[in-house]
Length: 183
Picture 1 (spheres, rainbow, N blue to C red):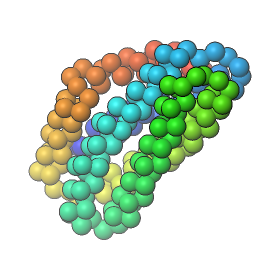
Picture 2 (cartoon, rainbow, N blue to C red):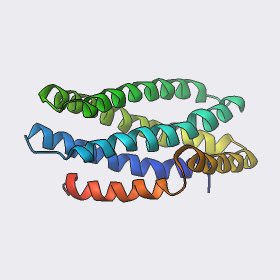
Picture 3 (cartoon, rainbow, N blue to C red):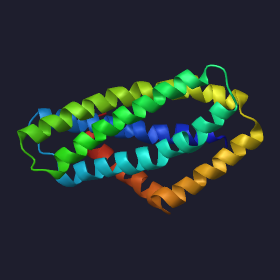
């Protein structure tokens, strides 16, 4: 398995969370009650799965490997992705602060605005990685470097998020999907 395959698999989970987040926004805007625990679970997923795990794999391993390999065209893409990571972190911080405060209309409005911004940002961000950056990595990184990256990714999962946490998040996704994603 290539390291980019691992990241693409994680993108599937993130895309599902983006659909869930959109469903939560629809419920809030419709005046439907959203379980506070669900909001806390979403924040944890965004902070731990997306940022601590997924973005760490990219920022600490894939991006530096690509820069070191001097892959033509990758630096501009990577620089824009790093800016997008920071923008996403700001959105998540705003959502998190709103969720941990009193859940008044202002907090709900902050959750919806930042969630919508985050969904839009991450949707195009994932597309850029899947269709522009990852093909460059697949084509230009030597097989031994890709193997080392994949091993590093496995270590990140254990050391940064903990054994079994990935599976917990996937279970959470499916539970929240049943509540917030209308087929």
